[in-house]
Amino acid sequence: MQRSFFIKYNDGNPFNIEQALAMLVEEGIVNARGEVSIPKNWEFLGIKKVLLRRLNRLSAKTRDSVVNASVLGMRINIKVLSEMLNSSPRKHLEQVSKSGIWRDLDEVFYIFSHILIQEAVYSTIMADKLRELHLSAAQAMEKVFAKDLHEHSAEIAAHFEKADKPEQAALYHFKAAELYWEQSFLDKSEHHFLRAVELSEAACGKDSPQYCRHRFYLTLLYHYQGRYQEAEPIYKEVIELAKKIHGVRSLELSPYLNNLGRFYKDIGRYSEAEKLLKRSLEMERKMSPGSSNVADRMNNLAHMYGKQGKRDKAIEYLERCLVIMEYPQNRTHWFLGVICDNLGRLYFYEGQIGRAKELVTRGYEIMREKLGDEDPRLYIHLISLAQIDVHENQPRLAETKYLKALDFLKGSFGHYHSKTLGVVEWLKELYAGFGNADEVDFYAKWLEKGKKDDETDAPKHHKL
Image: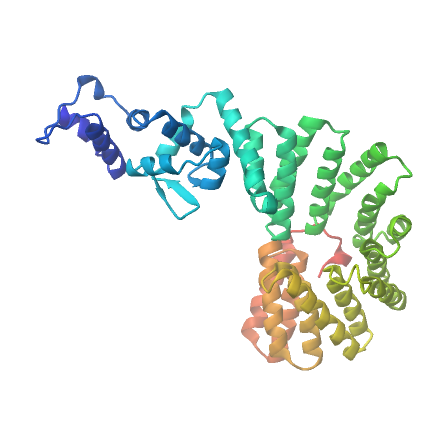
């Protein structure tokens, strides 16, 4: 019997035999001489039952700590667990550590010794109790992480979802989507926006402000990614919904009109774009004439005029934007960096290189200070600086900036997005100037493949 019992657990997994031996010792099956006498009905004892027998020997309060901890996953934050238990679990944690069920990582975290232990405990919790514990975990995290909820929003969303609280889950999925977008993890951002949409519909209905807002931000993401065919019908849907919620004359419609106007600008439907952008601009002026939102709407109009070749008008609008962004209440806003870069590029195309370099450099420094050196959103500023380097006959400086921008774009948008391919085109031209045939060939092949596999559905005039 002893032989068959140990053969059963000695299956190449040392964890199984370790747990079986620990159970035998704890239950007194091993005597003082080291002799083992295993009951006959233990032959069919699986590893899960072995683990649960060990856990059941712990005190009631210690078991309660372990059960609560299992809801948090493999890694246990002591502060969150303390909030769930409404007391310090330190004494119980030490008892569990001695049994080898988990170990401490540092002063804040413990970790289960093996995923099978966490899964075994979690599987014993009845459905109603499980929902209660996940709700407790979510609420505990809201308190513990109150100062940085966005950083933990995906985890909190998962707990609220498992607690069958779809409205709260939708809110935190939305926060997680915002965070991942900011970090340029766009696939993750889309996943959480979609969950926010689905859960807000289930909890509040399709006519609710929550559903409208979450759906709106999903289409903003699609627009940003260049997924225009997906974006357009959602824009139209949410504008109609926003009109029902806020009223057709409400100033609350401004962001919806502005972003549909941006969309039409980006696909070349300029007359429709201009009407919407100007309407949104007037709404923002009524609400706060010196706000960064006014500068944003004027920037969008300037971009549209620039695309139409009306550079004088674009420069006029952007100079006015710059004045607004220099107001004391706006001077520390990251959007000042965007305005400096946009205006600098227009002056570059007009041949005013000194003014262009001054503005583009200032824009880059503002954004780098706000975002850090390794934020992918710096790509556009690196491209502007690289173009000035090329003009000033400093191709090696341009090469460094183009390559860094390319790395950012590949990570955020993929190898064959139109934004990525634009930088590939510039690098091909740069290496042609160096006479580097191998690099020219490499980037030419990349562009050729990009014609087949372009990851956007942008109109042809918008490419590169």
